[in-house]
Length: 228
Image (cartoon, rainbow, N blue to C red; front, top):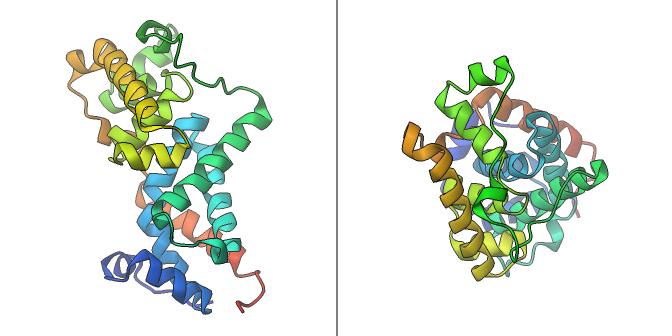
């Protein structure tokens, strides 16, 4: 399988997602790299919001791309490709967490701002790295309730619309709005007013990790039977 020598060139193409999908299905599997590089950070952030673990999130990301590639012929175009792909990553992350039996679904009826917040760090190491604003922000986001955390990351970190977030998570627009409002209030009380940190700084998916995921996924899908 051949891929471009300059990954940045993939990001500059004006091919739509749908056009890239058509080319991949026609046998040009190298184009799949374009889709991965376009959505690596979004999918990583979505997975990280669920697993709260960087290593697990990277594994989820790889498996989600392999799953999407294997089922690419099922993409009908009724939803945006980015939404379809994000749903696959979210489902894979939830499956990962449920295997470990440590994910508690968010209860929209009873949860409050207070119950969504993490406990104050107590050990010296945690206190030390909490001095770094981005680390502190990520710690605070991790402390949000399961179900609310994903909404906050997709909406305020990744910048998806309410409708896109609702579609990705399989909930209603009203649920997204309620959970986002509570998450913002909880974080504001604990963090924003004191630090001025900004949400888009959290859970960045930097180039070395991006390259590693792309390389490993391309190697895995290279073992798939030829398209057609």
